[in-house]
Length: 552
Image (cartoon, rainbow, N blue to C red; front, top):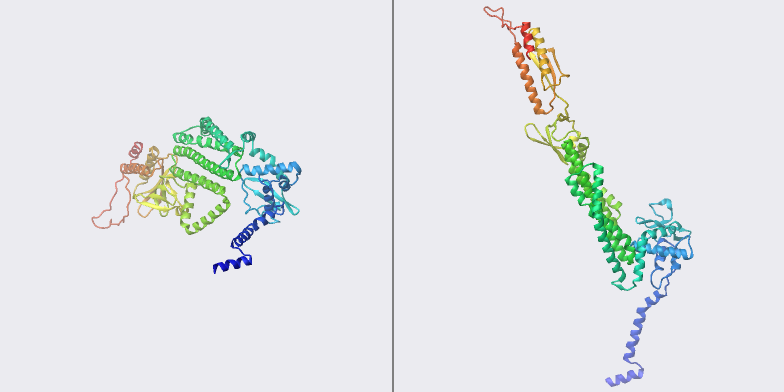
């Protein structure tokens, strides 16, 4: 049966190997169709929109079969021929040397594109607004070109990206040949080694001179130094020298002739390192400033300002770190304005959720700005009385006379009417001395004159501002008003001064025979048999009174 089948296939002209070969050819043809069609598509000059113009400029300068400087030069406005080709080539080398990768997904394809942030410029597109704002495209008629103004600045920018010493290194690289290892020319490895040696030389050359300049500048500004400042200054020269080395390497990067992808990565690392060094330097500089502020506060003995030192130091650190983080985020393509706006919205939401905390924080700021009191002051208001011990971010601690603690929110403190006894120029003592109604006028006058003499001779009182006068007739006494100012403003010292003054007045009253009144009732009993009214025996001898006053 098998033999008959083979005979029948031969008769029909069909063979199994030929059939498989035909199927393979058909499959291969199907697979090659897209490539054949694609190879037939030619990339032509397209200036219809910003995306097409930039792609045209870059595509026809690639070191491949597409290389055509003449076509690339058509994207340059205002120049023709050799000059236009030169500008186009230099512009691409600038992009490559600075590691500026073009993300075509972000380049607009709109024929009538208008930058919404700069409406006054009309149809204009800036490819790298932060890193190279002077290079931009503009619409002329129905086509987009690199503007004439941008083209005129290409030579200047090229000289900045490739300075003369970088050009010398480029010539050296070209002389060494075009051999490559891992996609990098052999000569580039030699140049990298040379740059490393130069960097080490720069480090040891500049460290000590920069430290000397920092000390000299610090002394010229503040006219003094201290141990903490010395430590902070010693940590600053190395980061500054590293910044110089990084700047040097950054200017030499184009000379290495790396491809744009490697250049972009290296520039990212360099910018991250630069930002980190600047953050470190600014933090140390803030420490120097806070150190001198601490010395000034210590000299003024203002304890409230002394508590402000950590607040200032932390605020400066947070500000430097926040700005540094914004810069780092911008290196990764994050818009800092968006971050700040998001932080503002988040801060607003947080503020609404914690109004009391925010009110207390604002109260703290107001206390530090207005300084209604300082640490150690004795204060009084309608709710609190005592010595201020501490001012925190949220509340103020006050020690009462009985040694208990008041913990008062700063928002409440900022709204209170505070009587700060710690800011007294003189401590006032005012009291009324009530003497008996039956005191003779001579003794009243002598008593008043004696008190004035005591005040005038006391070392505790102000001599030009006091009053002692017989002022009123009260229900049970004749009132003598005494108003005096003590030189010592401390509350405890004021009590001691008051004690000494009162004892002197009491001794005077005893010597003169003046009695102090107290609530009493007088009953007329003279009409009763064998009853007599009390008769106070006052000695009003003039010489005696004068002698007592003179002895004070």
